[in-house]
Image (cartoon, rainbow, N blue to C red; front, top):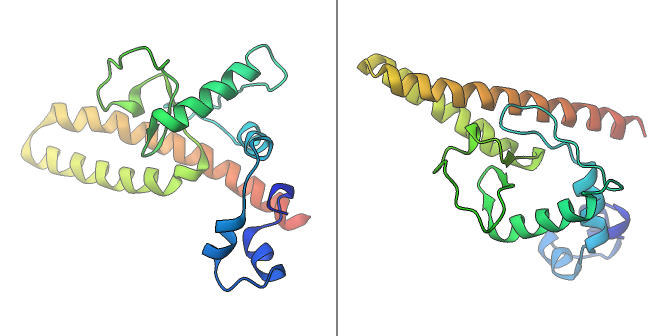
Length: 165
């Protein structure tokens, strides 16, 4: 049922499980289910622009394999790094200004929290006269605004579609 997109809380009720943890213990998502959802998910880069990876295109299989590897070895607290595993990152914690950064709606809570923290850093830097720190963080805040707007737009359209069905 889980692999046919029946929500876990519904499966829990059907199976008369006492807790979501019990259902989660038995639920096993197939690679096909995960891939289908990964392909459907809106992906945006550090500038909030959509990233398209066609499943039937020449890079579809490679992109899926790379996604699986990056999830396992290069997961970030707010998205994924598309940098090949054999390369060293030249950006050192500057993911939100890196062209290899990709994120999805599952990370919206982290993006909102990072946006709040970044705005506080900007305010403190401006008050202390640290113009360079404020400017660097303005770019991060701007990218977070674009990312959040793009991902929430997808959430709203998905919610409207789900509500209509």
